[in-house]
Image 1 (cartoon, rainbow, N blue to C red):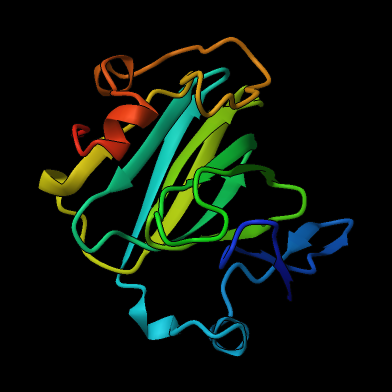
Image 2 (cartoon, helix red, strand yellow):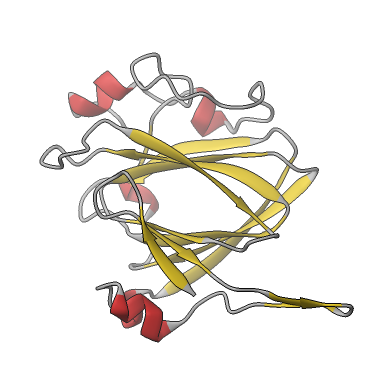
Amino acid sequence: MRVEHTSLADVLLFRPSPHRDERGFFTRTFDAEVVASAGLDPAAFVQDSQSRSAHGTLRGLHGRNGAGEAKLVRCAHGAILDVIVDARPDSPTFGQHQAFRLDDEDFCLLYVPRGFLHGFQVLSGVADICYRIDRPHDPAEDLSVRHDDADLAIGWPLPAGILSPRDRSAGSWRDLLAGDVRG
């Protein structure tokens, strides 16, 4: 498993080396030693979750207020375009976003530091996304920013498919900066 730095400060991409043969494949999806070698505490990740979404579904942009939440994200089945936005005011990449294709072909694991917004769109027929987070989820800390916010200008590859009520009513990037965004 290799570790790659991305164009956003503190964001890492863990790239496994799947072994493929006539039976299928085997890959390591988490390696505490590799995570530690990248400067992260593997024991800090305390909760695993999984979601399944249909083609075109767009989830996000979601974040946490308060202490925030760091996470490792991977697509166990299917393919997604995963987008993160640096919402840390003191960061050199504040307000910038980057997109990553996560899929069941290369099994990359994206490290999203605390203070980022996160969202994805399903590119395949269906996708299973796995999250490993560094603190228990607290719905009272949820915040959302519109996926199509003009100030962020994220280039989603498909028209927005299924959106949750939360995502349809999300605030803007400017609302977030003014402290007016909730989950």
